[in-house]
Length: 340
Image (cartoon, rainbow, N blue to C red; front, side, top):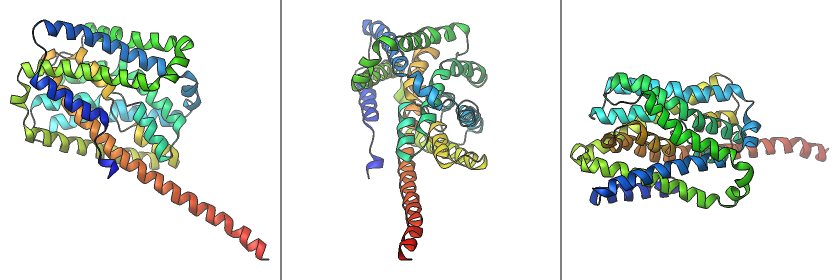
């Protein structure tokens, strides 16, 4: 079935990890890739800023109850579940893998896939654009703070210092703001070259992953991560995703949101950004730890796409069925009237 195909980015990530496993960067190449990775991260967030349209954000910005819940789900509920998961230790995983799960829980939502799935399912697209974009922007501030507040307490990873937050602002936020302010000059070019920009985004992520896994391979990541560890990461990712999806659907119905808004809450409040998470991890954590910390995020990314794609198709089919029933019920009085 089409919904279970591996997305192209995930396939490229697997190839990149294999390349780093057999041909990791060593010696003088490490410094070169460090410089190249920093430049790629800056370019990635410059493009994110350049793609962000203020008009679309304003169009969906008035739905404050929906946005409030999405932000609560992304930056409060998810981290709370991550803390519970790390404290409970229900699976046979190392402390570093649990650190990776906790890290993915504090990240912002995806932008492109959240909007695309909301549109496919028949949700409130304008609100999805606003929520997903706001989550991505706020994540540059909130996620590093959550790393400092949450992860320092439960791990030995240094992450909350002012120096690291300053590096986040310099490498992520400053290029983002410059890109957004440049829209008045480059907006037309951005719209005409979205395919090229998407490829640049992917290339930046792949470069960061190669650099991170090269360091991890040199430090013996595959001696610590076996097949059963990967299986348990898949199990943990599925469990975490289903809990969040269930809570978001229940909350949307409990608080009286309509069907399009429920769809938006489901897809914007239940996903985590690989595009933000990998570069941020490269800044926040020691080089030797980045590869193993982003491993749960990479697996969760693929699982969320597969599961949410399946849900989007179910919502779309249900919406088409409701529309057909509504059309049929509206046509009955007209037929009866004509028979009279």
